[in-house]
Figure 1: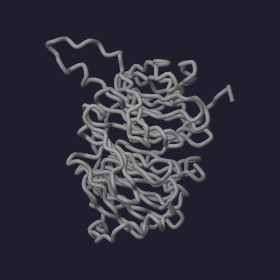
Figure 2: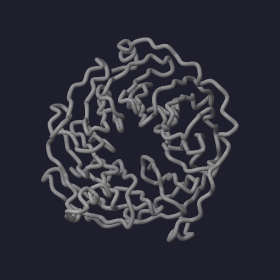
Figure 3: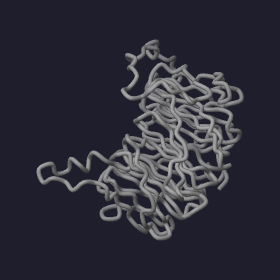
Figure 4: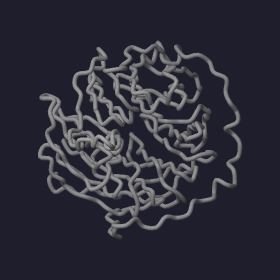
Length: 397
């Protein structure tokens, strides 16, 4: 649907003007610098380091049109738009009141949105570097741009998901259960969104009608909060991940669970410590391969599992020494990238299960990363207050 069609369906909204206040001077105060983590040597494979943040950098996104700009958000209540080639600052997205945990560009790179934990969301026009819209919601859990329109979706701790047309601010809300909407993803058709909740349920929403098409709960849902959700390239399949260590493959048209991938590596629980072992692991990230029927699931215990969707079986288990924070597939190959709590980025060949290469440079855990379209660079953010750009050297290409 065009943005206008979507806008026609949205109700008007009263705006909250508080977001326009000046940022507090205390936003400049920084936490005590943590020292280099044990075992993180001083090797630095990066080409560019962006170091304007004064605390942990939580999120990064590349502009989709040119992949030349990055936006990063951090615990210092700041977000910056900067040039990937040399780390040059373009502008600061100022005025946030809490840690900036969400940041991303619109599909055409015209706008950039930043969101902080308190629920203040701001949108800036990239070319003019001007703020064009801001709004306050409840505590922010996730935020995502529409794949084809200037429409922004966000989920909050009160269970609501919000959709706005930018920059007009026309708004629609999707009321979930009375618990946080922990993760969400707009499906590739741009007409539906899948949202996961803390109570283990998942809903597929019709964005135009504002109605829920499917609700997965009970046996079909998860036993614990959802942590992540992904869809394949045409949106026919959805995968959800949870603290319960299960990843569920779901048919998006029918809302039916196709299969459940369980991590069988977990040691049998001792009767005395019931529940302890399960809590120490969870699904942290997952995604679909675009060129083969494969899916990757990353776990907190450091396991990267490659599943074969055609046989619904485990194909490879790639072990990391520390927890996986996030994974991403290359757009047009069977290579999957992982970042982990040990501060390294690794590339894996999902066909063989072998590691291709490893990049280091951070002195603390990597918290987020992005890969450009032609898979030549990786941009990472870390608890060491820095963002880094790594050039991916691949002899096989």
